[in-house]
Length: 325
Image (tube, rainbow, N blue to C red; front, side, top):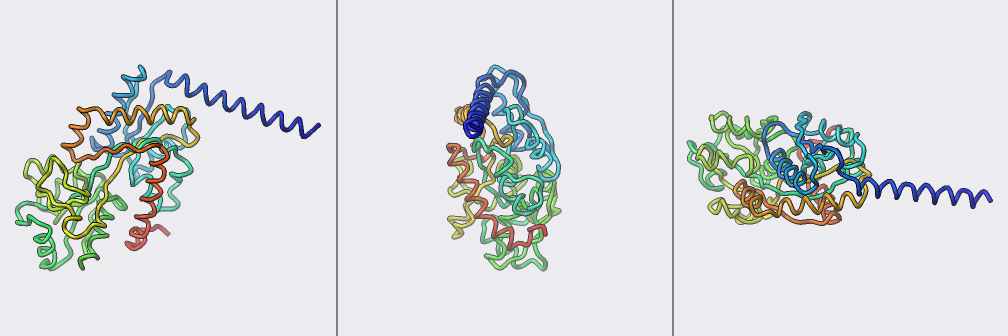
């Protein structure tokens, strides 16, 4: 009898949970939805968040808004979403840094992206580009390497922070070509690029999207990019791959996540509309000019992609001595 009663209680509990989950997905959204931008300024995560927010607002007939919560390399924003209810009203624009790099650098970060987040959809990726000040006369990767080897001290370079994609790409490339670079981390891309244009550092390892305006204006010279193939709007910008370094191909990618435990139906609903948002012709054109590459992945494909990226960059992080004890 006790066994029967226990079984009935379990069935009732499961049924109640299922109905509650179904109700959340069916009723959502019935109030404004927050999409957190984890980085300062009007950067890539802010731009992509607003594209998604505008599309979701139109489709779901409810207000979606972007809230910037910068600090600690995005960790403050991530924790604010991790600690929120899994009802779809708190989402975040995540990145390779938040989902794979930072947790590897600092195992005591305070959240585990695989356990504490629902990773909903891949949004877009932008490669890293090495830029220099045009005044030094460097135009090609060979020029850059010759310039670096003649320098009496290691070349300084900017990235958007310790453990970011630009940092890792430069740290990975230096030993491959027998060079040592001096990292100068910034809180975001803008100030580092401004200092490069002002001649205060030797080169930058930032995303194409962040560097696009200064490249197009001629304030910076783009030397080489980690894009697997030449970008349509930057046909004269060579890739590391064509220069004999195929293992340098990579992107700083952006995604959309929410708290762990979000209902599957709700995840699929948001995933579907995120893909539609990024597929709009006007969005495609705008992102292409900024050096973004969009790609459609199913929810399961994106989960596997995050796991592969984590496995790929972990040894680079360890070799660079970046793991926090």
